Image (cartoon, rainbow, N blue to C red):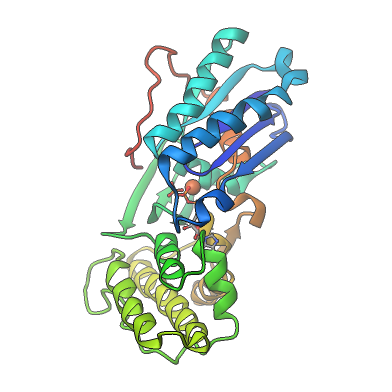
Length: 327
Ligand code: ATP
Ligand code: FE
């Protein structure tokens, strides 16, 4: 079995995965959303302190599995430095105490592997990752060969939802809150410009849209009814930007199997629109279960199983956090 630990942002999570079957035997996650909500975003030092409290509590519950563990897998990149350290330090302590190897896992590969919970992997894949820190398209051949073919030049898709929610005083995380508000709004009420719509670049940008939404929110003032239309129009344009750029990319790289991963892949409007986009290509869409879209340790454990099988271990002395590492 593999013990896995995730602490790259505001979720403290630990899982146990069976190597032979990919079966998830234990998974517990303690989210810090309520604590960060008052600040409208994650406060790194507060997050680190909460991880230091939560992780040992969850680890204690894994004690019955300790004698069966073959390795410990831990998110070591990318993420917040002060929170990654909490997980990596605990993983090293476990590795030393149980005399087992350690595996440093890239969190973004974790999101890709959320597609393969309790399953075998199916590559190759074209993947859209939409999360709090990333918006990128990747061609994934296998665990070792991942090529990023398009990415955001500024804010990420999920982050723009968080910022719009903050402007409206809704709380954090913004994605589900905006999605809920948008349900009753008119998607065409506000004619926001689709980012980079005239640019030949296959890249993403959300800061301009965010600023346009800010002006609309200011203009709406206390008229909360208008917030519904702003949310719906924002969600529509934020998604249209993704589908327009993907369509451009597909001209030279028609998709066969396409996946959406990351916290914001839970967005239902995005899922619907991507489904429509893929129809003319006859491409298959694969999605993670909603519970594994946001950060969790189960996906890190699933990567851990494949890295274990390929002997991709880190040395205890050399495994270090790498907060900014990309794919
Ligand atoms: P990264 O994975 O890039 O390091 P992260 O781990 O902080 O960043 P995730 O936990 O994967 O990000 O995703 C969280 C993001 O997903 C937040 O920005 C949140 O608002 C967004 N999100 C969650 N649900 C939805 C939704 N239904 N619609 C849009 N965005 C959503
Ligand atoms: Fe994440």
